[in-house]
Length: 179
Length: 461
Image (cartoon, each protein chain N blue to C red):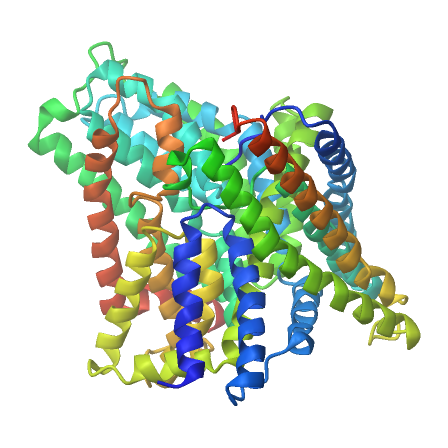
């Protein structure tokens, strides 16, 4: 499942993937923050019987950032789960053609739908100044909601990079396609 | 047949067909959802159907993604994955292996028993199938080859022991199942303790029996040292910190002291401290653990997001009721329907793994099970006892999905770490008895639901 993109060098696509991976390695630290937040909350709740709603909400905020931004990272490391019993026997050319069709017909429409609708979703939250239902909870809910379009944008970018990579591969005669 | 029904069937058929193109499952699901929403819209325009699907309906996918983000239970998921990755890097398993091997050295099949016992401990601590299979394989296969073990027995042991992680708590699969069906994570964790240990015990009994019936398949090494108190002490020393961590994480959930989310955070910290204690912790390890956690969590959630789009469109087309009425309409009686469903899950397991089955199939089945009116005794204290029990049946069945070719993840990982002379046929031959054991365990659970429900009932009673 975990195989790196060992494909032929494609400068633009390599730069995009590199950027997403670098960004991912920074964002991955939210999980360290998450551990610290949980421990802090446990200590406050158990030790001082005084848990904070804001800390509790911060936990899923952090988790949501990690999960959503991870999508594009996992795309560049080629980790998304696939059934490859037939795929591994296809010729490089067939693989490229299938992947190009897949990105154009299945993936990009799906990503576009989420992206377009999530803009309204964020805008509504911003317009009404949505905040946590709990009085002591976190406000500015539009910020965490904005994670959806931003992270999906990067996923789309990773997909375009893959698309470009496959098209170049197809033109070059598809020598040494990875995995 | 109505257009709606044709579209529902079309969704499942195109899902199965497109799976084999090798396009990632998450995007196949999402893409089919969008495509069928488009087809439904066109049908409404030109064929006078009323699917009600259009671009606006698809906007609900965003609300569903938000429900996944705004979810306090699922926060436990990356934390348990972090804990597992960190323990994997801390070298706990290597310590256990070297000390325990001496303890079981004189028993016929002792090495294979050691692998199973460590598999159980890894399952309760790391719970990461790929890492467990690789670790057990790398550590034990050379030794078992040297001792002259029959290859199928050695390979089957490694693959099945490494797969226990998905069943024995804290298992990320059970967290997701609890989220999908609105059950308590604690109930499912407690429910899985007895089935998980029972399955592990069945593996051990099987190995010892084979060693006894066919001594040549599991020879005793010639130069074994006698077991002394020193050996026992060494094993205890190696196993205590890990067991302490497992018991504090699970114990605090079972005793109701901590929520699963809190326990997962504490477990992640505990694993880090353990790695520090074993002098395996540094910045490079932390970065690598973070990277793996980030990556693994993401590819699991990608399927969440794809499946939510698929499920949304399926529901709009009336697919839920269609499946429910089909299953409840089967002329088999309640247990017959359960057998039918489990057989289906078993067959799907040849191609799909637990993530897809849990996220697509399980939510469709829950209302069917609730409607069967089964009389499963929850001792009056466990909520939805029939669902807790049913989830365990599915979890047990999904054990097989790791071992059944052509798409068995355990086999895939095992193949990667085998000595070169091992043939794929040996692996297949090796896992057959263990798949049979898993099916026997499944029948035991069907017959005795108390195995699942006794512990959660005791904890509340």
